[in-house]
Image: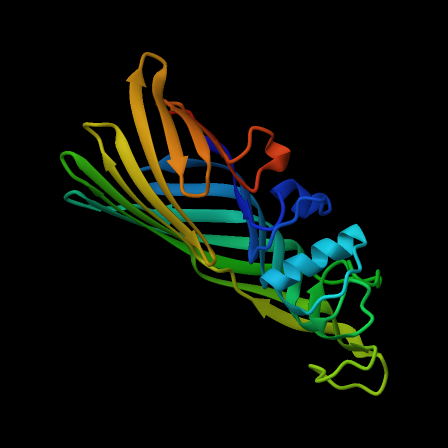
Length: 319
């Protein structure tokens, strides 16, 4: 039996905490913000893995000028500028079950995993256009927004829960000295949101030149309910470990977020202890044994200021 809590997050423009609770003064140019949090409990038996999972998935991709514009908007800074606005957003809260079976052949292992989800909460869509300042004196924006709770206009909604499926693939090779692992999460996925509330709109303010959309009024569009489908971008991790020296090297990637890591482990009486360094200016502490795994990887001692943060706690009980 096992239980685990995990969070992996990275945000270029602001700390991860500010991305959720409101942008502060420390805003940098950036192109993405991503976080994936999971709570799991389940069992392993005769090659099978079955688990219940609660998952929070946030994936935002935008242009660097979009991050600068939104930072100034949050701070009330109306200095003129020329901002090209681009945003693609997916935010899902899900729960469900996942199951997988591990096939073994000589020193190789292959484990496909399938997850079935009920989508409780969701925000998804895209925005594109331009603005001359955070005061929006001249702007042209095209919006396509799907949601269960309207964060923009406060429109009351009564959408249905969504559902989805995601497939992972884990590959491994265990040599006499070297271990190789490749993990592909959300390699294929589909999230169906029936009767999702939506708002589509065209906004033109201040006689904007070369507008990205046309409308007879400053603001035009429509709202309603329609089926919506989205997918998750996959995440990959490649790990190579030298068991004799206690060294391991890892490459992780998710769309615009990439990280290279090196870790050194030492066997002690209380388990295996490790230190890691990462290309994202993170340092990590690791502790594992036959019954648990604990990891903390961050780029700041104050977790509320961390732009790159990873936490992992897993407990195992043999039965």
